[in-house]
Image 1 (tube, rainbow, N blue to C red):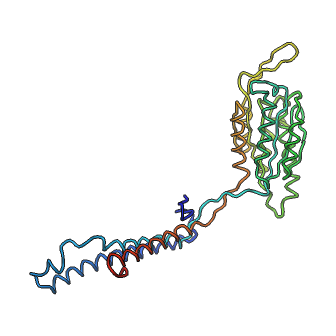
Image 2 (image 1 turned 120 degrees about the horizontal axis):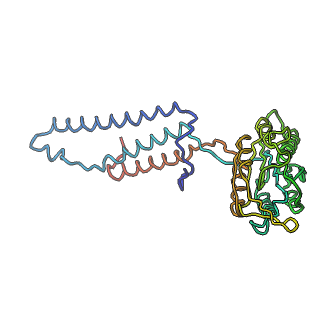
Image 3 (image 1 turned 90 degrees about the vertical axis):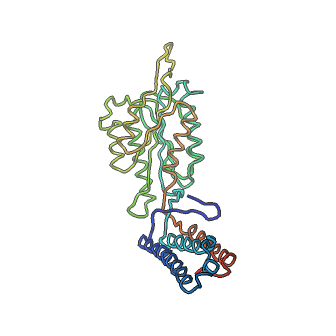
Length: 335
């Protein structure tokens, strides 16, 4: 958590856990203080005239005199926490990640159940995603129907993807497997360029479609969707799928109205097989939230950061208060 005026304060991820054992010091000092107060009271009564005892040693001394030492002990506890080196999770933008955006341009994407159409709405949401994506992330674009076309190879120049989105046009069939294999090939190519060592950059495929694959008919075909999902899993590239549309969608083909309800089942299975997440969007707002979730996962990385400063500031404040109270209440420093 973050405390105003003190900064980040955490009680987890200690770098030097063994230093927490020093918390026994203020606890021991508290015991010694209590023992000293008891012995002091007994000593005063022992060497004082019984008739004057109540005057010399009042039965009810002000409890405020204990506040300075209490604040000092609290300061020692806070200092112990600071010395143990707590850490907190910090989100920083990635600068080597790769995202391949694969958008379905099959005929069913002409459906107007999402205004002005599924494809046009998908274009605008993808543009928004590209504009807001972390600048250092390499973004590419694939349009797929019966075949997959790499319109933009992964690049940090997101304007190229934004411009290419205007060129998406409907076509026949839906070959999800081809789109995934093309995305994996593009990621492998850019990874070879970006990798300065043996560790490849993190990568993700974002697949947007409104239905299941129909080319080939069997998703377990060597070029099928499920085969591609397993390949993505093997290469460590999760696939985040977004099923876009409603159950009321239809398209006009000649003089016929053909229903094209959204079918998320295959997309969910692809995400599960590849180790990614699946999302459902029935309108533009939900689609934007789905893209935002992907950006949150891929555009940033969580790294441990120090969180000792807040505890140290609080310890100094408590120690200062202890000194001031001691001079005000007891007319001396806390002992």
